[in-house]
Length: 331
Image (cartoon, rainbow, N blue to C red; front, side, top):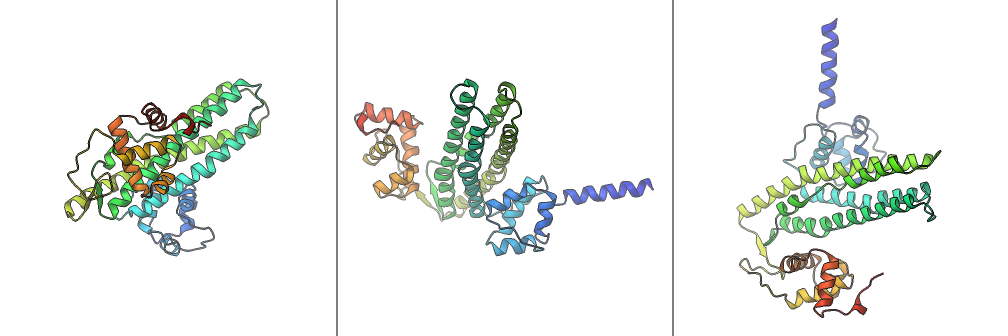
Protein backbone atom coordinates (compact mmCIF):
# COMPACT_ATOMS: atom_id res chain seq x y z
CA UNK A 1 0.00 0.00 0.00
CA UNK A 2 2.74 2.45 0.97
CA UNK A 3 4.62 1.53 -2.19
CA UNK A 4 1.57 2.37 -4.30
CA UNK A 5 1.17 5.74 -2.54
CA UNK A 6 4.87 6.53 -3.09
CA UNK A 7 4.65 5.49 -6.74
CA UNK A 8 1.59 7.72 -7.23
CA UNK A 9 3.38 10.67 -5.62
CA UNK A 10 6.38 10.13 -7.87
CA UNK A 11 4.12 9.98 -10.89
CA UNK A 12 2.47 13.29 -9.94
CA UNK A 13 5.84 14.92 -9.32
CA UNK A 14 7.06 13.77 -12.74
CA UNK A 15 3.89 15.14 -14.31
CA UNK A 16 4.41 18.49 -12.58
CA UNK A 17 7.94 18.96 -13.88
CA UNK A 18 7.32 17.57 -17.38
CA UNK A 19 8.08 20.28 -19.95
CA UNK A 20 5.12 21.68 -21.85
CA UNK A 21 4.90 20.32 -25.39
CA UNK A 22 3.36 21.51 -28.69
CA UNK A 23 0.62 18.88 -28.38
CA UNK A 24 -0.51 20.06 -24.92
CA UNK A 25 -3.81 21.90 -24.77
CA UNK A 26 -3.21 25.60 -24.20
CA UNK A 27 -5.77 25.76 -21.39
CA UNK A 28 -3.83 23.09 -19.51
CA UNK A 29 -0.76 25.34 -19.52
CA UNK A 30 -2.76 28.14 -17.91
CA UNK A 31 -4.24 25.72 -15.38
CA UNK A 32 -0.74 24.52 -14.44
CA UNK A 33 0.86 27.98 -14.34
CA UNK A 34 -1.40 31.05 -14.22
CA UNK A 35 1.55 33.42 -14.75
CA UNK A 36 1.66 32.19 -18.36
CA UNK A 37 -1.36 34.40 -19.00
CA UNK A 38 1.14 37.28 -19.17
CA UNK A 39 3.25 35.37 -21.68
CA UNK A 40 0.16 34.84 -23.83
CA UNK A 41 -0.75 38.51 -23.58
CA UNK A 42 2.72 39.62 -24.70
CA UNK A 43 2.58 37.29 -27.67
CA UNK A 44 -0.80 38.77 -28.62
CA UNK A 45 -2.70 35.52 -28.06
CA UNK A 46 -6.43 36.06 -27.59
CA UNK A 47 -8.50 34.02 -25.17
CA UNK A 48 -11.28 31.64 -26.16
CA UNK A 49 -9.03 28.98 -27.68
CA UNK A 50 -11.16 26.12 -26.34
CA UNK A 51 -9.45 22.73 -26.60
CA UNK A 52 -6.79 23.77 -29.12
CA UNK A 53 -3.20 22.70 -28.64
CA UNK A 54 -0.24 25.01 -28.12
CA UNK A 55 0.86 24.43 -31.71
CA UNK A 56 -2.61 25.19 -33.10
CA UNK A 57 -2.99 28.40 -31.07
CA UNK A 58 0.49 29.61 -31.99
CA UNK A 59 -0.04 28.92 -35.67
CA UNK A 60 -3.35 30.80 -35.63
CA UNK A 61 -1.58 33.86 -34.17
CA UNK A 62 1.56 33.61 -36.37
CA UNK A 63 3.74 32.88 -33.34
CA UNK A 64 6.78 30.62 -33.38
CA UNK A 65 5.72 27.63 -31.19
CA UNK A 66 9.30 26.79 -30.15
CA UNK A 67 9.86 30.32 -28.82
CA UNK A 68 6.55 30.31 -26.97
CA UNK A 69 7.31 26.94 -25.36
CA UNK A 70 10.86 27.94 -24.48
CA UNK A 71 9.51 30.95 -22.56
CA UNK A 72 6.60 29.02 -21.02
CA UNK A 73 8.88 26.27 -19.75
CA UNK A 74 11.56 28.69 -18.52
CA UNK A 75 9.07 30.82 -16.58
CA UNK A 76 7.39 27.69 -15.16
CA UNK A 77 10.81 26.40 -13.99
CA UNK A 78 10.62 23.41 -16.31
CA UNK A 79 13.25 22.05 -18.61
CA UNK A 80 13.40 24.28 -21.67
CA UNK A 81 14.96 23.99 -25.11
CA UNK A 82 16.23 27.24 -26.62
CA UNK A 83 18.04 25.67 -29.61
CA UNK A 84 15.13 26.51 -31.94
CA UNK A 85 14.30 29.84 -30.32
CA UNK A 86 13.47 32.59 -32.84
CA UNK A 87 15.15 35.90 -31.99
CA UNK A 88 12.64 38.02 -33.97
CA UNK A 89 9.80 36.38 -32.01
CA UNK A 90 11.61 36.86 -28.70
CA UNK A 91 12.34 40.53 -29.47
CA UNK A 92 8.67 41.08 -30.32
CA UNK A 93 7.74 39.48 -26.98
CA UNK A 94 10.20 41.67 -25.05
CA UNK A 95 8.98 44.84 -26.77
CA UNK A 96 5.38 43.98 -25.89
CA UNK A 97 6.47 43.44 -22.29
CA UNK A 98 8.04 46.91 -22.28
CA UNK A 99 4.80 48.40 -23.60
CA UNK A 100 2.83 46.58 -20.91
CA UNK A 101 4.99 47.97 -18.09
CA UNK A 102 5.41 51.52 -19.43
CA UNK A 103 1.95 52.11 -20.88
CA UNK A 104 -0.29 50.06 -18.61
CA UNK A 105 1.01 48.52 -15.39
CA UNK A 106 3.20 51.31 -13.98
CA UNK A 107 0.71 54.11 -14.83
CA UNK A 108 -2.10 52.04 -13.29
CA UNK A 109 -0.15 51.59 -10.06
CA UNK A 110 0.48 55.36 -9.94
CA UNK A 111 -3.22 56.16 -10.38
CA UNK A 112 -4.18 53.79 -7.59
CA UNK A 113 -1.35 55.07 -5.40
CA UNK A 114 -2.67 58.61 -5.80
CA UNK A 115 -6.07 57.46 -4.55
CA UNK A 116 -4.66 55.36 -1.72
CA UNK A 117 -2.38 57.92 -0.07
CA UNK A 118 -2.93 61.55 0.97
CA UNK A 119 -1.31 63.62 -1.79
CA UNK A 120 -2.94 66.91 -0.77
CA UNK A 121 0.45 68.27 0.30
CA UNK A 122 -0.01 68.01 4.05
CA UNK A 123 1.49 64.52 4.37
CA UNK A 124 5.23 64.63 3.70
CA UNK A 125 5.59 60.84 3.70
CA UNK A 126 2.91 60.53 1.02
CA UNK A 127 4.66 63.17 -1.09
CA UNK A 128 8.01 61.39 -0.79
CA UNK A 129 6.42 58.02 -1.65
CA UNK A 130 4.97 59.46 -4.85
CA UNK A 131 8.27 61.20 -5.69
CA UNK A 132 10.16 57.93 -5.13
CA UNK A 133 7.75 56.10 -7.43
CA UNK A 134 7.94 58.71 -10.21
CA UNK A 135 11.74 58.68 -10.14
CA UNK A 136 11.69 54.88 -10.28
CA UNK A 137 9.37 54.88 -13.31
CA UNK A 138 11.72 57.33 -15.06
CA UNK A 139 14.59 54.88 -14.49
CA UNK A 140 12.56 51.97 -15.85
CA UNK A 141 11.56 54.00 -18.91
CA UNK A 142 15.19 54.93 -19.59
CA UNK A 143 16.23 51.28 -19.15
CA UNK A 144 13.59 49.92 -21.52
CA UNK A 145 13.94 52.65 -24.14
CA UNK A 146 17.67 51.92 -24.31
CA UNK A 147 16.88 48.27 -24.98
CA UNK A 148 14.24 49.15 -27.59
CA UNK A 149 16.32 51.73 -29.43
CA UNK A 150 19.87 50.40 -29.06
CA UNK A 151 19.97 46.72 -28.10
CA UNK A 152 17.06 45.43 -30.16
CA UNK A 153 18.07 47.60 -33.13
CA UNK A 154 21.55 46.10 -32.95
CA UNK A 155 20.18 42.54 -32.89
CA UNK A 156 17.77 43.23 -35.77
CA UNK A 157 20.75 44.48 -37.81
CA UNK A 158 22.66 41.35 -36.82
CA UNK A 159 19.79 39.16 -38.01
CA UNK A 160 19.96 40.91 -41.39
CA UNK A 161 23.71 40.22 -41.59
CA UNK A 162 25.14 43.55 -40.39
CA UNK A 163 27.73 43.73 -37.60
CA UNK A 164 28.25 47.01 -35.74
CA UNK A 165 31.98 47.60 -35.40
CA UNK A 166 31.89 49.01 -31.86
CA UNK A 167 29.12 47.03 -30.15
CA UNK A 168 28.60 43.50 -28.84
CA UNK A 169 25.78 41.99 -26.81
CA UNK A 170 28.28 41.40 -24.00
CA UNK A 171 28.40 45.20 -23.61
CA UNK A 172 24.69 45.09 -22.76
CA UNK A 173 24.94 41.94 -20.61
CA UNK A 174 27.78 43.36 -18.53
CA UNK A 175 25.78 46.42 -17.52
CA UNK A 176 22.32 44.85 -17.46
CA UNK A 177 20.79 45.10 -14.02
CA UNK A 178 17.47 43.93 -12.66
CA UNK A 179 15.17 46.89 -12.20
CA UNK A 180 12.70 45.56 -9.66
CA UNK A 181 14.78 46.17 -6.50
CA UNK A 182 13.63 49.77 -6.00
CA UNK A 183 10.02 48.70 -6.37
CA UNK A 184 10.56 46.21 -3.56
CA UNK A 185 12.17 49.01 -1.55
CA UNK A 186 9.11 51.20 -2.10
CA UNK A 187 6.87 48.42 -0.82
CA UNK A 188 8.99 48.18 2.34
CA UNK A 189 8.87 51.97 2.83
CA UNK A 190 5.07 52.00 2.64
CA UNK A 191 4.75 49.02 4.98
CA UNK A 192 7.13 50.49 7.55
CA UNK A 193 6.38 54.21 7.51
CA UNK A 194 2.99 55.07 6.01
CA UNK A 195 0.32 54.98 8.71
CA UNK A 196 -3.30 54.82 7.64
CA UNK A 197 -6.11 52.64 8.96
CA UNK A 198 -8.88 50.93 7.02
CA UNK A 199 -7.27 51.50 3.64
CA UNK A 200 -8.16 48.55 1.44
CA UNK A 201 -7.00 50.34 -1.69
CA UNK A 202 -3.51 50.77 -0.26
CA UNK A 203 -3.30 47.03 0.43
CA UNK A 204 -4.43 46.43 -3.13
CA UNK A 205 -1.73 48.77 -4.46
CA UNK A 206 0.90 46.99 -2.38
CA UNK A 207 -0.23 43.69 -3.84
CA UNK A 208 0.11 45.16 -7.35
CA UNK A 209 3.58 46.52 -6.52
CA UNK A 210 4.72 43.10 -5.28
CA UNK A 211 3.36 41.34 -8.38
CA UNK A 212 4.88 43.95 -10.69
CA UNK A 213 8.28 43.56 -9.01
CA UNK A 214 8.12 39.79 -9.51
CA UNK A 215 7.06 40.27 -13.14
CA UNK A 216 9.95 42.68 -13.78
CA UNK A 217 12.39 40.25 -12.17
CA UNK A 218 11.18 37.44 -14.44
CA UNK A 219 11.38 39.75 -17.46
CA UNK A 220 15.02 40.65 -16.74
CA UNK A 221 15.85 36.98 -16.14
CA UNK A 222 14.42 36.11 -19.58
CA UNK A 223 16.75 38.69 -21.09
CA UNK A 224 19.75 37.33 -19.18
CA UNK A 225 19.07 33.62 -19.63
CA UNK A 226 17.41 33.39 -23.06
CA UNK A 227 17.93 36.59 -25.05
CA UNK A 228 21.63 37.27 -24.39
CA UNK A 229 22.83 33.66 -25.03
CA UNK A 230 20.78 33.52 -28.26
CA UNK A 231 22.35 36.78 -29.49
CA UNK A 232 25.85 35.60 -28.55
CA UNK A 233 25.26 32.45 -30.59
CA UNK A 234 24.06 34.53 -33.54
CA UNK A 235 27.11 36.82 -33.33
CA UNK A 236 29.37 33.76 -33.52
CA UNK A 237 27.44 32.28 -36.45
CA UNK A 238 27.52 35.56 -38.40
CA UNK A 239 31.28 35.94 -37.92
CA UNK A 240 31.96 32.33 -38.86
CA UNK A 241 29.82 32.61 -42.02
CA UNK A 242 31.89 35.56 -43.13
CA UNK A 243 29.16 36.98 -45.37
CA UNK A 244 28.29 39.93 -43.14
CA UNK A 245 28.58 43.67 -43.70
CA UNK A 246 30.56 45.71 -41.14
CA UNK A 247 28.83 49.00 -40.48
CA UNK A 248 30.75 52.07 -39.31
CA UNK A 249 29.40 55.03 -37.39
CA UNK A 250 28.07 56.79 -40.51
CA UNK A 251 26.07 53.70 -41.55
CA UNK A 252 28.62 52.76 -44.26
CA UNK A 253 30.65 49.58 -44.75
CA UNK A 254 34.18 50.39 -43.64
CA UNK A 255 35.65 47.72 -41.35
CA UNK A 256 38.83 49.66 -40.49
CA UNK A 257 37.41 53.09 -39.83
CA UNK A 258 39.36 54.48 -36.85
CA UNK A 259 37.58 56.80 -34.46
CA UNK A 260 38.86 60.33 -34.20
CA UNK A 261 38.88 62.39 -31.04
CA UNK A 262 37.12 65.25 -32.84
CA UNK A 263 33.36 65.31 -33.19
CA UNK A 264 32.09 65.11 -36.74
CA UNK A 265 29.61 67.66 -38.05
CA UNK A 266 26.87 65.05 -37.90
CA UNK A 267 27.68 64.28 -34.25
CA UNK A 268 27.46 68.01 -33.43
CA UNK A 269 24.06 68.15 -35.11
CA UNK A 270 22.90 65.20 -33.02
CA UNK A 271 24.22 66.82 -29.82
CA UNK A 272 22.17 69.92 -30.63
CA UNK A 273 19.06 67.78 -31.09
CA UNK A 274 19.71 65.91 -27.81
CA UNK A 275 20.13 69.22 -25.97
CA UNK A 276 16.80 70.40 -27.41
CA UNK A 277 15.12 67.32 -25.95
CA UNK A 278 14.50 65.40 -29.18
CA UNK A 279 13.85 61.67 -29.00
CA UNK A 280 15.83 59.30 -31.23
CA UNK A 281 12.91 59.15 -33.67
CA UNK A 282 12.63 62.93 -33.77
CA UNK A 283 16.39 63.22 -34.39
CA UNK A 284 16.16 60.68 -37.21
CA UNK A 285 13.28 62.62 -38.80
CA UNK A 286 15.05 65.97 -38.34
CA UNK A 287 18.33 64.81 -39.93
CA UNK A 288 16.77 62.37 -42.41
CA UNK A 289 18.70 59.36 -41.13
CA UNK A 290 17.67 56.03 -39.60
CA UNK A 291 17.05 55.51 -35.89
CA UNK A 292 19.79 52.88 -35.96
CA UNK A 293 22.28 55.48 -37.26
CA UNK A 294 21.17 57.89 -34.52
CA UNK A 295 21.82 55.31 -31.77
CA UNK A 296 25.24 54.51 -33.29
CA UNK A 297 26.15 58.20 -33.29
CA UNK A 298 25.00 58.56 -29.68
CA UNK A 299 27.22 55.69 -28.57
CA UNK A 300 30.18 57.26 -30.36
CA UNK A 301 29.47 60.68 -28.87
CA UNK A 302 29.35 59.21 -25.36
CA UNK A 303 32.58 57.29 -26.03
CA UNK A 304 34.44 60.33 -27.34
CA UNK A 305 33.24 62.78 -24.69
CA UNK A 306 32.94 60.25 -21.85
CA UNK A 307 29.57 61.80 -21.10
CA UNK A 308 26.69 59.36 -20.72
CA UNK A 309 23.71 61.46 -19.60
CA UNK A 310 21.42 63.81 -21.49
CA UNK A 311 22.04 66.49 -18.85
CA UNK A 312 25.81 66.15 -19.32
CA UNK A 313 25.56 66.37 -23.11
CA UNK A 314 23.28 69.42 -22.77
CA UNK A 315 25.83 71.15 -20.54
CA UNK A 316 28.57 70.28 -23.06
CA UNK A 317 26.47 71.75 -25.89
CA UNK A 318 25.92 75.01 -24.01
CA UNK A 319 29.55 75.30 -22.84
CA UNK A 320 30.83 74.81 -26.40
CA UNK A 321 28.40 77.20 -28.05
CA UNK A 322 26.43 74.55 -29.93
CA UNK A 323 23.15 75.78 -28.43
CA UNK A 324 21.88 78.74 -26.46
CA UNK A 325 20.03 78.53 -23.17
CA UNK A 326 16.94 79.82 -25.00
CA UNK A 327 17.03 76.68 -27.16
CA UNK A 328 16.72 74.36 -24.14
CA UNK A 329 13.37 73.17 -22.90
CA UNK A 330 13.79 73.09 -19.12
CA UNK A 331 10.15 72.40 -18.31
